[in-house]
Each structure stands twice: as C-alpha cells, then as structure tokens.
Amino acid sequence: MNQTARANSNVGGAPVQVATAVGRKRRRLNLWRHRSLVLGGVIVGLIVLAAVVATVATPYDPNKQNYTALLQGVSGQHWLGTDQLGRDVFSRILVGARTSLIVAAGAVLVALVIGIPVGLISGFYRGFWDDWVIMRIVDALQAFPFLILALVLAAVMGPGIRNAMIAIGIGYLPVFIRIVRGQVLAEVRKEYVDSARVVGCSDWRIMLRHIFPNITTPLIVQVTVAMAGGIVAEASLSYLGLGVIPPTASWGTMLHDAQGYLSQDAMLAVVPGLAIAVAVLGFNLLGEGLQEIWDPKLKE
Amino acid sequence: MAYVFQRILTMVPVLFFLSVMVFGLIHLIPGDPAQVILGQEATPEAIAQMRMKLGLDQPVPLQYWHWLQHALAGNLGQSLVDGEPVSHLIAQRLPVTIELAVGTILVALLIAFPFGILAAVYRGRWLDAAALFTSTVGMSVPSFWLGILLLIGFTVKLHWFPSSGYVPMWQNLGQNLHAMVLPVVATGVREAAVLMRMLRSSLLDVLHQDYVRTARAKGLYGWVVIIRHALRNALIPVITTGGLQIAGLLGGLVITEQIFALPGFGSLLVQSVFSRDYTTVQGATLVAALLVVVVNLVVDLVYGVVDPRLRLGKESR
Image (cartoon, helix red, strand yellow):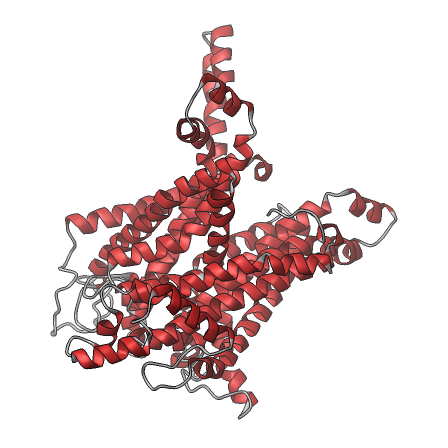
C-alpha cells in the first residue's frame, strides 16, 4: 500500500495503472498465502449464517414430528431427508448450528470473564495468594480431563444449555488463565508499565488499559481454537444426553439418535457429524490463519 | 535424584486442591444431595439415613478429612446403586480403557512418525502440504463421528467387525483385539494428526541447527542424519506435549467407549452419572485426575532423562 502511494505521488499519470496492478496482484497473492484464514473465515461465516437463518425461519418446524414421513432419504421436499420421528433433518442441522455456536461462545465467554482478571492478577502481583495458590488450583483443575470435567459438572448441575456452557467454560479456565498470565509476565517487565506507574496510574488501570491491550493477540487465537473445542464438547455432552435437552436440535443428539438406525439410514449419522467436522475445521483454520499473521516465526 | 524429589514435592499442593475439588463435587448438587439422589418421593427417614451414609450430617471440614483418610487408604466409598466398593468397580473397568489408550497411542505413533518426518524433510512440497492439510482435517473430525462412520462402513455394510460384544483379553485375545480395532482407529486418527504436526515443526526447528549441518558436512547420508541425529532432539518437545495429550485422550475415550459399547472406565462414569451414583462419580473423577497427574509426572521425569539440561533449574514453567 505504502509503495503504491509513493509511486502515485512521485510520478503521477501513467504509472498509476501499473501501481494499482501491482497492488492488485499482491492482494491476490495474499489471499492465497492466507488461505487458512480465508477458508476458515468463509466456513465460520457460513455456520454463523446458518445459525442466523435458523433463528429467523427454517424450511420445516425442526421439532415437528411427522409419522407419515419417517426416515425418508434425500428428496426435493426434504433436502437432507427426515429422521426417525419424521423431522426435517436440514431444519434441524440449521438449528443445531445455532445451538453449537451459542454453547461454544457462552463457554468461551465464561472462560474469558473469569480467566482474564484471574490471569491478570496472577501475573501482575506474583504473590503467594494471588499467584502461587491460584496457579496450584489451575494445575489441579488441569489434571481433570477436559471432557470428564465438563461431563461431571454437567451431571452435577443438571443438563441444559446454560449448564453446558458453564461446565465447558470451567474446563477451559486453566488454558485461558495460563495464557493471560504468561503474557502478563512478559509485559510487566517492559518499560511502558514502569512509565505508567511513575505517572501514578493505579494497578487496575495499568492492567486493563496498558497491559491488556497488548495481550489480546494470543487470546483471540485461543478463542477461535476454544470455539472449535467447544463445538466438539457440546456435541459430546449432548451425545451423552447431558447437554441440550431434547427436542431442541443439537448435532450431538442427532448423532446419538441416528446411531440406532445405522442400517436403515446411514445418512442420518453422516450429516450431523459432517456439520460438526466442518464447523470445527472452520474455527481451526481461522485460528491457524490468525496465528500465521501474528506469529512472525510461522510466517516464512 | 534431587530433580525427582523436587518434582514430586511440587505435586503435593496440586493433589491437595485436586482432592478438595473432587470432594466438593457432591456439594455442587443444587439443593440437598440426599434428596436429589433419592428422588422426590423419598421419606424424611430415608433422606436422613442417606445424609448419614454420605456423612452430610457432619461439619464440612470433618467430612473432607474423613473422605481424604479413606481415599488415601484406597477406599473410595460404596456405590450408591449396588453397594459395591467403588475401587472394585473402577479396577474392573480400568483395564479396558488402558488397553484402548495404549492402542490409540500405537495407532497415533504409527501414523504420525512416518508422515511427520516426511513432511519435515519435504517441507514446502506437495507431500508436506498434503500431510498438513490431512492433519488439519484429522484434527477437526470428532473421534465419535469417525467411530460411527467406521461402524457404518466396516460393521453395518461389510460385517468385518462386531458392533459390540466386548470379550476380556484373558478370555480370548483374538476376539478382544478384533473388537478393539475400530475404536482404537477412531480415537487414534485425531491424536495422530496432533502428534504429526508437532513432530514436523519440532523436526524443522532442529534441522536448521548447526550440529545437523555438521553431520551432513561429515558426509553422512541424509536419512541417517535425520533419524540418528535430528529426530532424537526433535522428540523432546514432542514427548512433553504428547504427555499433555493423554488427559484429553482420557476424556475422548469416554465417548469412544459409549459408541462401541465397551465396558471401560468412561462408560462406568457415564453410567453412574445417569444413575446418580455420586460416590462412584466422585471416585472415578478422582482416579481420572490422578492418572493424569501420574502420567505428567512420568513424562516430566522422562523429559529429565532425555534432556539432562533440564534436570535442575528452570523451575517455573
């Protein structure tokens, strides 16, 4: 961009065309170079679109049972067929996208709301109670396999969208606290923090207004990765019957229901799983792409 | 030795908080746990009895102390469903899960090593690109869906593998392994994808280092340098991250066992969750967390053996 501008101001007239041509070529190259980001962004965009569409309208009522149209294959009427209760699979996939995104985003939000302040305090003060003890608790929390922790919490609190969010969010806490703390540890030593202190900023002001804006990059990458994991976790919990309460559509419950009809209608199990895989792939690619941009080591 | 001791010492506070969390589980149940366990129609006497059985009539710190004493002695209480000792239930189920885990790791290594090395060596070529893309896809395919796909293909359509009917190893090894193939592949693919990626990037780091160039300059054949010189050092970070993967694997196996109807540790957990058998849930959760802690300890110690530089110092992670 800079070069383009310089070329314009220096020569003017004819070379402008050349300059913009170069600019366009470079932009196209970048698109290829950041293919993970682009592809991931497109997929995530489509999933979000599906979720929005599901909120506005679906081809059929996703929960309406129709006993005259059970386990129908793909047709013009039902694009992805119907399930064992005659419900339209396509409509349920759309609603499932919404369920997935809501639970995953809610879980990430829980992890952020608790993880950011705790990580900030822990990395900033480095004391006994506010760092050592917190980190040992984080260590202990991390010893629980993520899915087992979410499973047990969901079991204790009861199923449902809200509890699934909390359970998965708590499972994510160790990762988020560690990332924030690690970044803060590196930032605290920098000069601008001393300057802020000299000027008389309060600790909280330094943490939130000075340090925090500098640590958002790895956090955003982690958020996209956590969205992918959250989608899998929601599907897993729902598959086990501890996530979303039926009849609300979730990709996980759809998979679970389909397992009883593998020999009659295998498509029923293929479609929701594919939806999960594509959604997860989208967020993973997005995370990878963002990391490529921000992490100079990976750029090459 | 000092390293081992120091490492074990750091575990004590972690284990303390871990035990408090597992103990606290039962108190997270909204309302009166005894009432929840027994259901709405329970008589006040039955509830009082259950409270006594769970020790809920005592002050909380005392409850914890008793629970911890028992747990340290290997007594995790009795199942609320059939009164069987929880430790027995877990001991019965754990071998299945361990077999699954070992199989999964083998599958993961078998896939990850050749492709990870090839991708690093042919970096930037089509082989590398294909391996990377496959690994991204592999990481995105949830193991439970892959499991169902394998069931559709190999069990429902081809009838090559049984859909259920687990046979213990000591009864019929052949049948046992036969039933393990699909579950192990279903979980192994994802782990392989993660491992392959790690191996590739760590190998790339090492291949740029001076000693590798020296080995090459000495005239050693390319693959000798890669296997004998580069791979050894490249493995160090892979071991650590691989160790951390174990925790995730243990969680993933819960679902795998459910899909393939395997009577492992995970299905015990799920089963007891649904029967509100909270002592079993508590015990199983504790054992799962302890397993992870022990595996991480072993990994750290192995790490120290592989890389003497890390044996002392570098206390903070």
